[in-house]
Image 1 (cartoon, rainbow, N blue to C red):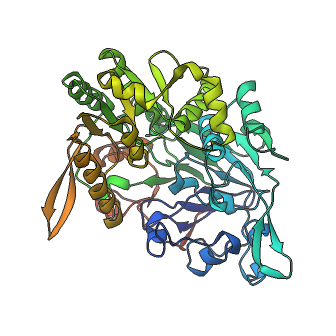
Image 2 (cartoon, rainbow, N blue to C red; image 1 turned 135 degrees about the horizontal axis):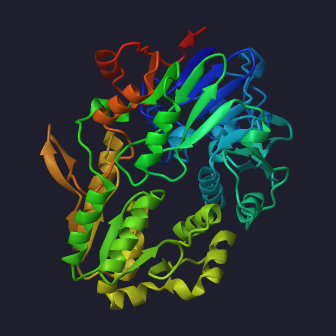
Image 3 (cartoon, rainbow, N blue to C red; image 1 turned 90 degrees about the vertical axis):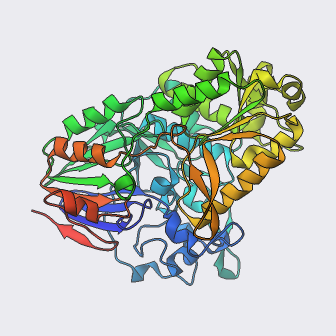
Length: 502
């Protein structure tokens, strides 16, 4: 087996790991490397969609391989100059963009393997977003060269589906959801179970901060385990233990090491629940809960808090659409009693949002109603939803920051803006503070209000010792040397480097 790390070997995120033996070629994830992108791009300086993959190739943000959609290749890019690698499928670990955000660039004939939850989440996100070509994962709009100017690619009005391979059986309702969409007709999308493919792959759901996160075992000439992102301190920690048991004595372990460079502490979801519950119990005003829109476990935490404190939890229309997609996976009713949908003031609405408003009209809550009874609600708003608070007009209240920490200077600026909003609206802040450090004002995060989606160093040790591989390849980390210092058989592969086994 040959293992090549095209990306994700030297940074947190951007995983693009290629496996090849005499029978099969696979990619383990094909994510967007946010650290690399931030070196060149910011909010108003982005890659040009009309130039396809030209800009990303020129800046070395994607590997120069012959694997991309032909419709994204402008006339001044010659793909025949790039090496060809075999790709029978891409194994997606979960629906975070640092693991799947460049999948939309790949040739539409390459199948995607993912859990039902991951496919449902990705489909719902694509339905509700104005996506770039890289995030056109479940379906995509093929580009057409501008007449007389082949360097410019224009979006067509057609949508083509990909070949999706699910790791376990799906419901008929989810099948119909994947094949259809409220605003566009999808051509050619196909669905298949992993058993039908003949691929020697075993999938295990693992504990992470998003539903459907999956670890994979690849049974080729060499047995290999890939963790994706995982942890052992969430509600689904038993699933991670099942993956460890199933992967025991795999010859190779490719493991994430996000927290290998950070202080070793664990905040469980249970502790987050207790701390946030206490804060809400002590508040007599409006409560805003800020957490990742895809962290559905945290949403369930705040739904329980709302129920215990006699409040109603208010989500955005996009979150409601995502929750409805999750219901199609496991049949668990999520848009139910105790949940309301924020009716934001907007002059024009997309088809998906109209569908939400029509389907759950009885659950809609207007900002005027919230303003009159602020003590009755918990609003699930993150940074980009804050503009809606100007319509709610809070008279004081509590802002609980229950999301990830800042890992870049640009993210730190976002926290300064967030703090300005909180101060302007007269809200009490929990979850982080601002402090003066090294000549700059920076956020300091208060423990107990957020649980990481990644394993601590202690848990990384447990995972490695439980699997007991011959070879350990750390990825998704800024400190691979921690693995070298603590384990035998560690091979650190930098981006572009390969390892041949057997």
